[in-house]
Image (cartoon, rainbow, N blue to C red):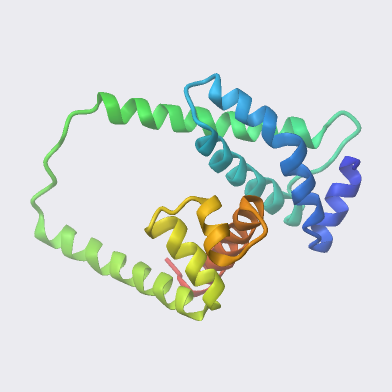
Amino acid sequence: MEDKEIIRLIKEGDEQALNYMYIYNLPSIKNYIRTNSGSDMEAEDVFQEAIYVFWRNVIQDKFVLTENSKISTYLTQICHNLWNKELRKKARFTNEEYIDPIDDTEIIIEEEKVLTKRQQVVVDCILKMGESCKNILHLFYIDRVSLAKIAENMGLKNEDVAKTKRYKCFLRLEECVRQNYKY
């Protein structure tokens, strides 16, 4: 599939383009992340986030395909940036000492109010979702069930179908939260 065709399909909402990008780009990203202190699961998460960034940029016309550019190069660069950011986070967590929280009651109370509003918006959005999406998001993010096990439990064809479904459900949840929560 050519890059122009991928862009066209994404703008039309056709998921065939995303599936194609998974098949042809994920192996090289997995290899890169494995050789840079990561796991396959981390590579899939980074790639999923990169696909979302790419998809959003295409939809919002922020990605412009030129004669000298390629989608695979763009995706690879996004993945490299995301993985390097993740490695910096890991390094900070392993090198930082524990710092006691600030003992300022007013700040804590205000933060809890904001957090409560955010949580309520997320809960409301989840409640609006279909049972299938509720189940897959709960199993994956709360119960930490593998995508292979989710596919098996929910009667899905395979792990890739579960991954795609999780991604779509997450996008719906994210969109709902964005529409319903104003800072």
